Length: 123
Image (cartoon, rainbow, N blue to C red; front, side):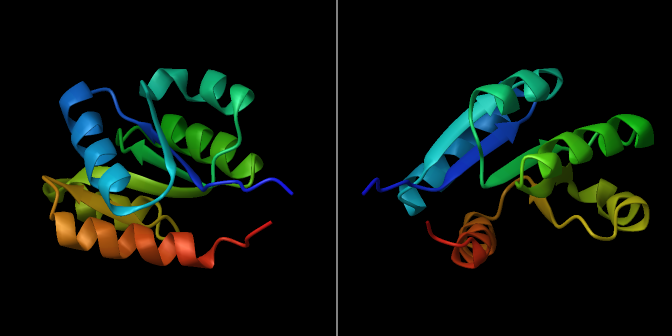
């Protein structure tokens, strides 16, 4: 029997933000966390299955929809990573995509991702 840890992909162009998110998640959960640039999402999804994809919100509707589609096609839960001042735009454009605001509130990120991980069916 193979023990598979949950896998999270952070698709974020700002490396320091991605690294901070990776640190928070790696310290809080027994999971695999990987980082890629937003435009590298398609390639990252070919190489590995992820349970959660945390995707930087661009505000460009066609681009955001394309990346949401790619991630969901693999069965991943998609979460937007967005600046607080973009929250209303995200909610209006993508009401069915949850979001994590940056700068991070570490406690809220842990609680939110923990809830998502608890909903993922275990093999």
